[in-house]
Image (cartoon, rainbow, N blue to C red):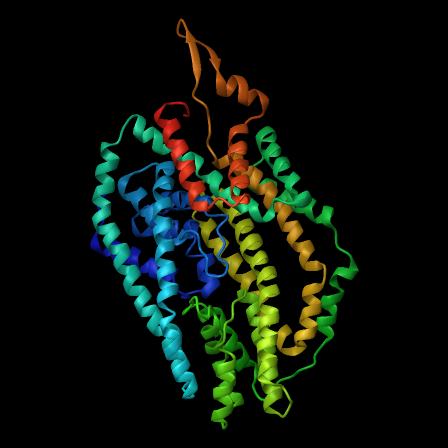
Length: 534
């Protein structure tokens, strides 16, 4: 199909949005419109085929189920992979597996851009420190948001525009010229790649008793024909029963609810929520290797610091300095830490003897455990589990599935984050630590692990394609078929399961995800060219 300049510009603008905090905040945007399932719908609308766009995007999304952003490390850019992979598939008329094979190198190129961005943004730290030392609190939005975003948008817009403008015609020409073994090999390659995404996802959940549910979910799908939704519902209930809850598990939460050590003394609720929203939106706008979220945390604190130290410029400068140090944690738990710090700043202003070191110690002590629990709950539990449920619907052409996924995720994420903000502000650091040390979080994680493993078993059956094409024919009669006569006779979908477990064990031994990806692509292409896999 022909693609217009306007369509290219719209796609480039969408990618710019997907790489910033607008419209849903830092984590909110990354977990929704940056995901291939969601971007597939939007790109399909731009190119005039939302149904096929949703199907392609959801299929690409399987490859990135296991992607986790931790400590600034992002092995692949799922946003670029989904946006460009869907675009080229629709423009060139590629089949879904070929689109998946094309998306992988594009995602790796996007990760290079992310590394360069984080490196370049280190230069803004010096400017931020200068304005902080001068007490120019309102200037931080420029150095933390406006300037980095302007540069990021220009680079990404140009990159997508150039790739689409010059690459679209090439993709169309290549897809029209490809035929026979080469096209079949690309399709085989794409059929194997979902095993990489599922295998990498298993790295974080395939442990303890949860691992047995991978095989139970696999067998339920292979032999009983259950779809992903049915597996999710059945094993979700089973997981809750197996893990179980007691009144003791909720004791810490009751203690937090009953604790009201702090009430608004200087700031009001509106100003506290304003600071929290700035944290959720701009904590990684100037994400860099020197301070990570440090400048973002300080920018978020500005509304409350301006109120607390409105007649004390020296106090404002000192507060901004102690809140611009190195900081890196989960987004929701970071809001809780922001609430604690706001409460401490109020107490300090009112005469409490709280040294600067107390703020540094608190943030340093909490950010690690908070990241460990928070990143697990959001990136390992919530995003993948929600995604696999709605991917099954999206691959069947349900254009409402990405929308439902987005609404549900944002509701849970911001609902929990809003609650945690006030837990931190009203209860203080010690109460929060007791909450984190309670066994409830671990039980929630275990339930999610059981459910995730069961659903992963269903995904292997539905989306990993590995069928041997080795047959023996005598007098035009098939007398032997390796796939149906051997593997299907033992366990249907056995090869997809073995391939996925192979990815998991390779990753567990420390093999890089990019190496595993290219090895899987090479295996698929070679076996496809030789005609050994159909």
